[in-house]
Length: 169
Image (cartoon, rainbow, N blue to C red; front, side):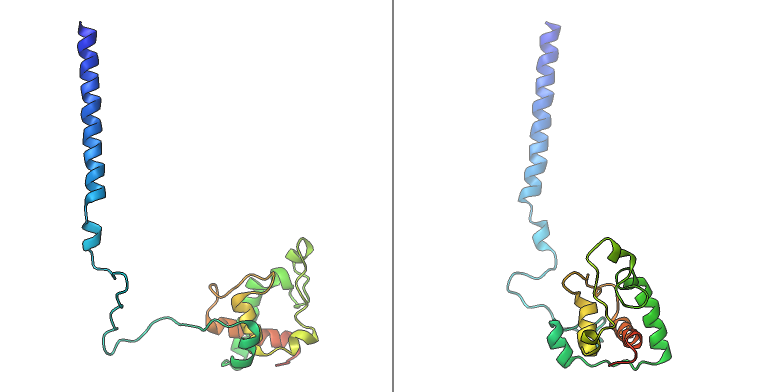
């Protein structure tokens, strides 16, 4: 008799627990609290920025390397500070594949598809914009560095590459 009462009590506890859990789940599914927060609704235009505000960050157009080669101009003169920064960044981001001298002899090249020699005529004849876009967006096997490097840092690397190539540009 006592076992039957315990079993009935256990079943009642399970049913009440299930009902309470169901009520909590249904309350969460049926509540509209998330819809009442300030946010853009579908097809709604974002607010205009306040007058006098200054935008932060940067935006760059998406170009392929050939287009970039035609329209992008290097705004950073190849002064010593730019070349030094470019050399430092090249050592961090490029040397593993392209090697210290740009000829493609980095440690990754020994175990992967060797990258091109960036000192040859093909690359010397490309515009600074082409090289910049290649650094930013990557190449067929080269990873993009656009998220890792600022605009100025990418141009500094271009200046350093031109120095490696013997001053072509």
